[in-house]
Length: 436
Image (tube, rainbow, N blue to C red):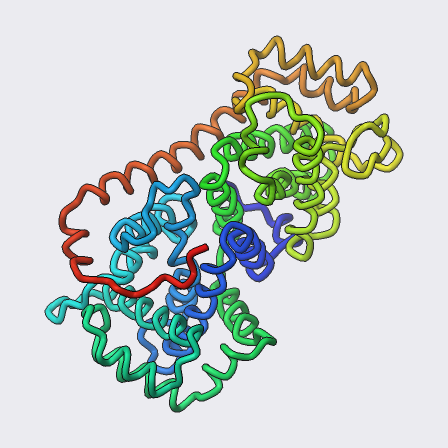
């Protein structure tokens, strides 16, 4: 995505990372809570021992927060007990579908064996993540400092770097507030860690990449959301430009489109992928996604973006949801996103339908405008420029799907590589206390 100075007014590093954490927390609260705790300990370790430059350290702490994202696959493709596949999955995802790219390499060594002869900063950082994660697990299990030290020092799996163990427990003894904050219900450790990560000076393009990453993460949960989200954003942006509104408003509409359906992450998968027309309780639950979107993105973006995203199913005649707003209550951004959402929904495949052709899409959109449900002027912009708009939408869809397919291909390759399994060739008898 091209950088746009107007966009920076609506979000910053802190709010985007907050949005990402909220989305991932919706997918799996246990892993994200453990991830934040591990990131907090790693943050203190990096500051104390200066193992990397500050800018690298901040991204490494974020990587530690995200280290278990490989288990987010909803369909069980990655076994939770297979540390090699979990490492491969997390790495492949973050390399291809996030702004972190090659900075995700330490995850290839997360929970791997310690090899004394290896001298690799990525391996060092991966092993360090394994160590802080184990401290978090033992802290959950309410072991004392001395008990944790004894258990880790005598661990037979061979996954901890001896020097790391010595330094970490020296740190925990010197800075007794680390364990105190982890056990404090005020969650001050999360505030401290979040502030540290937000100082990484990400570019606007990278921050937008984290928004895309949240959508990719949702793709693990529902395989029909990704194409719809990205095409809706392109269509909405083009319609906003054709409406000749200021650049700042265009940015608001584009960002609202990128997050407008994130509320579906709370909708049960059997409702999201129901192979037919929804009725009754199923229909009501699906319609709740607009309300859920507002709850999830509130506090992460400006109130205008939040409202535009939450109003994408409202109709000019008051027949929409969740609030039943009418023409006079809706902003231009609300109206543009409503048209873009319908157009994209007709274009994209769904569990209950195939993609409609261009003529059918135009026919349905026009009929909605004639019925007084969506804005006639915006629909006219769409129809007069339909071919050009949809060409851009399809190009963006292909670009994003290429990233997704690259991630899948890299994971498949790693999953068949003997060398990665050799790194995890040990007996792991540790109980996963975070499994639902």
